[in-house]
Length: 631
Image (tube, rainbow, N blue to C red; front, side, top):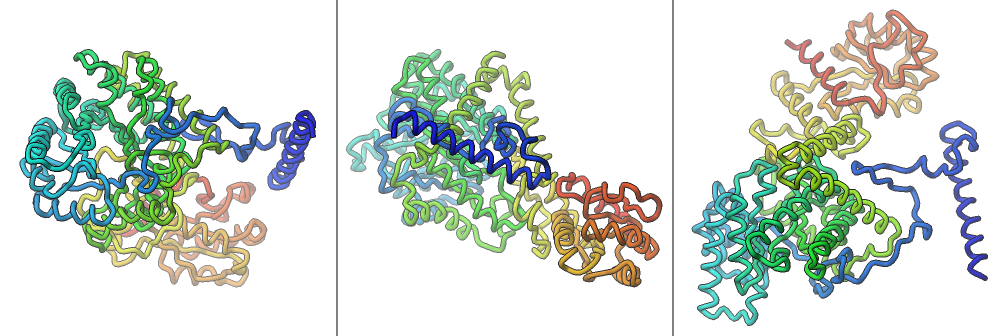
């Protein structure tokens, strides 16, 4: 078959698929297929918070030129083409956070290394491990086998000096490391991104001075961490996180080269820390796009070969929920999968109960850490995800998504550069305002349940035990997706403690189960997401006098009527009237308002519960009303 015939066949097949799509959509929307236009499939497009369009289907029509191999510019397929496929990415874990006992930290580190951890992230200073205890905490740790990154905040300079002294002492004692460059450490200085989050850190000048010392050492030492997670935790989209991080990285490069470091050495002083979410394809494309854009920065600087961004992925703290925290295990598994497949050099999985105070989930800290560690080990050692570098390469969808995200990243980066660079954009509000707008859009989607947070605004478990009343946030700078609904659940817990029962609403199901079950289930699920218990007496009928006794027996002051549109037309107004006569003060309807468009007076509901209402606002109003009834 000639190429022309193949093209004709492909075009005909695509046209037939479009017609099939139009037929299905026309049926579901109850319109004529001709009304859907020449490209009906575009009605199935979705748009990300970055404005990237995701199509329902990708074909050879979306094919892009093949990217160079891993380890080659622009590094979209990976910065290291020689990564050991038998070990895959580095399994990173946090140590020392909230633990001041060096012996305990050392025991935990050694146990973790024996059980699969291959990189260390050590917190020092403040309430964490004291900086002076660094030597004891690292006793027996071979830093040529397990790379180390410090997180010491304002004590970074002191911690770095302590670490350098330790490395020098080990070298002098003959630690057996043939090539000192095999010892890989990161000092974790992050003055620019600390400036966004408000965390205590070192000054930029001190960080640059550390980088100058680090660049001169025989070991592989990176002084600076571009911590993109601070933008993500504030509500940033993927492109916004990357764009702000790239801008911060460029500002670091300017400071380092102004201090006299050559551009190759300056590029070698940076590593990126980025968030990985449970949207696996977005995460895969995000890490690929991040390398692509940073490679372009290096190219503009005249050092293309040094543009392979070192990436440390951390599962998103913002996506972690306090309610039904076991679901967090699924979220972090997807996030680790996306980051690993996307080419991150190291991955840290946060414990599933990280958003809760210690012990609130009823498990030990060691259990949570083991689950986090084993999440990665299962992906690496049983699913063998590290065996192939960039396994998503060639996917029409992933390649298109990577390019689209990269374009949005570059666009945001240019916007930041236009106002004078990272610090100027931070001061003028360009970065904060942009991220704030995205956060508001996401919060609205979650509140309207357009975006599902399993166990929180969908499929909540109202029977789970109340949470402790002490502070339960992961940090003031983490805008958790579940926070608004969990505030409602906290109110429910307080109500339970004061009254011995949850806030309650009476369900009035009209007709047999086959008729009302859909809307009864919807209403109960919606109410439970706000901590409100639905009292369901079973099928009721407005014509037999069963509604009023059931409503009175419940003791509730608010009711939700549930049934089919047909049943509403037949009995809806009578049912609403019966509920009011039984003492119900507020009657809501599970369904759209148009059903009662012609009904006025006592037979008209006070409100309507539909799939896309602002659930946070509606549930807040219900809790306010119930609280008022009990005061």
